[in-house]
Length: 145
Image (cartoon, rainbow, N blue to C red):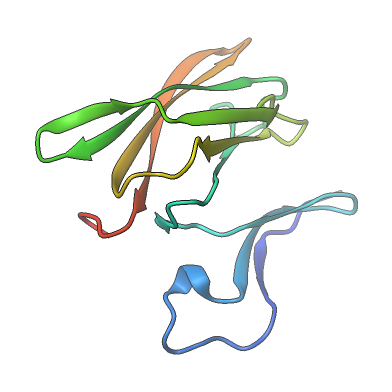
């Protein structure tokens, strides 16, 4: 049994909206029992949760099951450099990868995200080893977005 990758549209597109607000999603994985809809989003609203979807795999691209995903820290870029940002919680309901190698970390702001660029430093631990990676998101007017 193989898997399918593709895109899904739910309705017509809107000329005046950025791609992240269009009614379209990427489908990074689908088989007869599971489907993952994904929307790559760079800019989020200040009250939004931020979901980080990761697929963990070996050098031969085979999925790694039971890898543990965690947030090491979040930095917010400012005119003074990076500042550690602590006003959030992490929902770890799906932080262990499934048989397809997928795991999700949900970042929940305590009240809201301050405007700016955020660097999320993550750790992936499995029987294969430990890897540190980073992901970025933006709230409000941001550099490079």
